[in-house]
Image 1 (cartoon, rainbow, N blue to C red):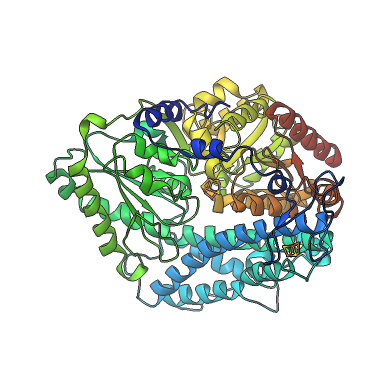
Image 2 (cartoon, rainbow, N blue to C red):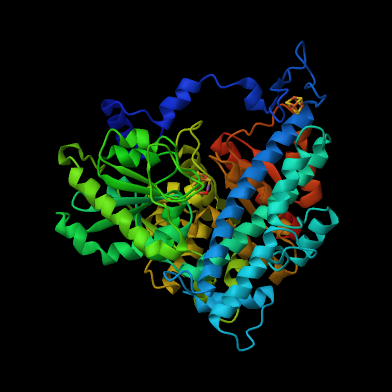
Length: 632
Ligand code: BF8
Ligand code: SF4
C-alpha cells in the first residue's frame, strides 16, 4: 500500500529509509497480519481469566467468554472503553485549562490572563454568572469552580451541555437517560459497567457509552471556551503548512501535542530569547512550528506554521533540522527518542503524566511556565549547535493555509453580508440550494490507509456537489498540507453554487477572492465550534440539529478520541461517516445499533465506508434526505 500522498511525507519516508530510521509504517507492516479477534472486537481482557476470544464465524470455536459474555457484550464493552478513553483525554485537557484559570485567579499563574474579554463576558452570561461588580480574577475563580463541578457529579445536568444544545436535543437526551451527571463520573461509570460481571446487555452498554460521549462533547465545549478566554478566540489568519516551513538558518522547535497552556508560553518566550538564538549563529532566531493539535492552536491564533500531522510526526525529525521537539500529551509517538537518536534533536516531555523513556523531562506548571519555557529554548539552542548542516534535508513543500474560523469568526464574516441577521445569508443559500449542506471533516490520519488519500478524495467529491466544508484536527492538517485551505482551491474545486457563496463572502471580508475551500475551525477539541454553528442555525429555525442538512466525517480515524467525538456527533443528531472500519464487526447487533437503531433514537447514526467516492455518495444522500425532511 502506498504510504502517503503528501509530497513532503513521501520525500521524508524515502529519506528515513536511506538513514535506517524505522517509522510507524514500518512498525505497522511488522504487525501484519493483525489479529482477527482484535480487529473484529471479539477479544476481551477485562479480567485476569482472559484473554477470551469468540469465534467470529460462530462455527467451531467458542461462542462465549469464560464468564459467559457473548460476542455482542464483548464488542460493546470494548467500544465503550474506547469512548471512555477518548472522553478522559478531552476532559483532562479541559480540566488543565480550568486549573490554569483557577491559578491565575489566585495570582499563581503569572504568565496567563484573560485575553478575550468579550468571550469571557459571553461565557459568564451563558453559564449564569453575574458580574455584580466583581473583579476579573474573582469572576475567573467563580467560573473555574463552576467548571470543576462539571467533572465530578452535579444534581443538575452539566451546565456546558444544557446551555449549548437545542432545547429539543436536551429533552431527547434526558428522555433517553443520556445526560451524564458529570464528565469524570461518565468515564468511571463506563469502566464500572464494562468490567467483569456488570452490564451484559450490549444495547445497554452502548447507551452508557453514548452517555459518556455526551460528557465528551461537554468537556470539549468547556475546553474551547476556556482556551478562547485565556488565549483569545481565533479570527481568520493566513499561515503556512508542510515540512518546508522548517528553516535551515533558525533554531527550529516543533511544538507537539494538544494544550495551548504549554505552547503559548513557549511562543512568548521565544520572542524574548531571540537574541540568544542569533548569538548561537542562527540568523533566523527561533522558528516555531506546530505538530498535531498544538499546531492548530498556534496556527489559528498566531499564524505559526503547521508542520505536519500525527502519523507523520516522526518525519519532522528526519529533516535533520528540528533542534527540539517539545510535547505535552496525546498522539505523541513513544518512538520519538529513538528517531531522534539518529539526529541531534532534543525530545522534551513536559507533563508529569506523560514522560517517555529516552526523552529529557522539563516539568512544566503554570507557576513557573516562563522560566521552564526558557529552559526548553536554551536546550534547543544547545542542540542546534550540534546540528550537522550536511544532514539537513528540508523538503521544498510549503502551502498557504487560512485558519481561525471559530464560530465567532464565521459569524463575523457572515455579518459583513447581513449585520442585522448574520445567519441569514448562510440559511438562505442552504434553502436556495447554492449550498447542498454542511460537512465537518474531523479525525486523524490512520496508518491502515494511505495518508491523506481519503481526506483529499472525499473533500473534492463533496465540494463539487456544493457541500460547505468545515474541518478540524488532522483533517484540517491534511487540507492545509495539500493547499486546500486557500481561495485558489475554491476556484479549482468548488461546485458553482458553493463557489458563488464563498466568493461573495470572501469579497465581503476583503479577501479579493473567495473564502478557502474548507473553513479551518480549530483543533480536535474545537469540534464543538461546528456544533455551535449548527445549534445556532437550528435554534433560529426552531428545529433540532438532527433536522439540518449537516453531516460529519472522520475518514482516517485512528484514536480513541475520534471514536468519542464520532459518538457524540451521532448523539447530537449527525449522520457520521467513518472511513476506517472500527473493531465492531464481530457483533451484528452492535453494528445495527450504531448504523440503524441510533438513527431512530437520536437522528444521528454511523456510516462506515472505506471507499471515499462511495462515502461521498452516502453523505450526499444523507444531506438530501434531511433537505427533503425540511421541504427544501
Ligand atoms: O486530537 S485528529 S491523531 S492530533 S486524535 Fe490526534 Fe486524531 Fe490528530 Fe489532535 Ni485529534
Ligand atoms: Fe473473559 Fe469475561 Fe474476563 Fe472478559 S470478563 S476476559 S470475557 S472472563
